[in-house]
Image (cartoon, rainbow, N blue to C red; front, side, top):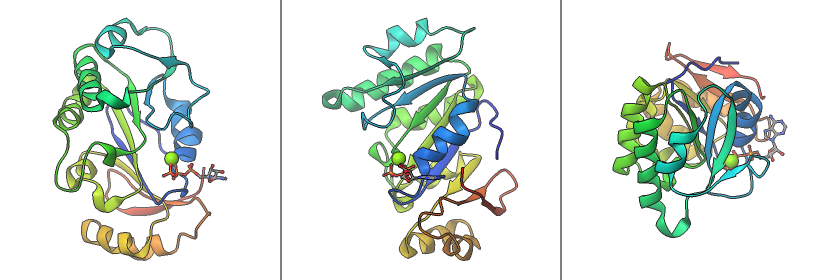
Length: 201
Ligand SMILES: Nc1ncnc2c1ncn2[C@@H]1O[C@H](COP(=O)(O)OP(=O)(O)OP(=O)(O)O)[C@@H](O)[C@H]1O
Ligand SMILES: [Mg+2]
């Protein structure tokens, strides 16, 4: 199991149902002291208290000395603007916060990343903001996001995606093919860069 350090970003990659959210809740969330879940699905984090409104107003007021875990639902009709506001608020007022984004490709593609996301990735580390992101589609994830996430967990993916990942991480494909569906195991690539089998949470 990894121990998170503040400002070290984490990527969780795997087909739908491969265990990303479960792993986040079981292995990562318990380590988070100041967590904001960007909840675009509105179902999986119902247990967390919900914060509404303008991020520029509420992020400033989040307690520094007390732990909290909250979810924030960006208004679907104003998503890029709301996410921009959240990113700006975090960069301005956020320190030592963990931010979970459940589907990175809602905001980026293989070719490009929405500017607020790139800027958040870049500026977060210095502010000890930890970004934890998940994605069902490795082919849709920017290489830049992989390169800027020190911890990566690759859960079950289809053959097509294994080949794609092999180009980024030579040797990973054969390791990935040993992961059986519903075993909820993953291949972990950390700072050393070597892929290693990770038991399920
Ligand atoms: N480690 C585990 N042990 C037991 N059951 C698990 C484990 N991981 C996942 N599951 C089961 O598999 C289901 C799907 O897992 P999860 O929701 O984490 O998938 P996901 O990768 O987040 O999928 P999606 O991309 O659709 O969000 C869970 O609801 C849970 O029932
Ligand atoms: Mg999920």
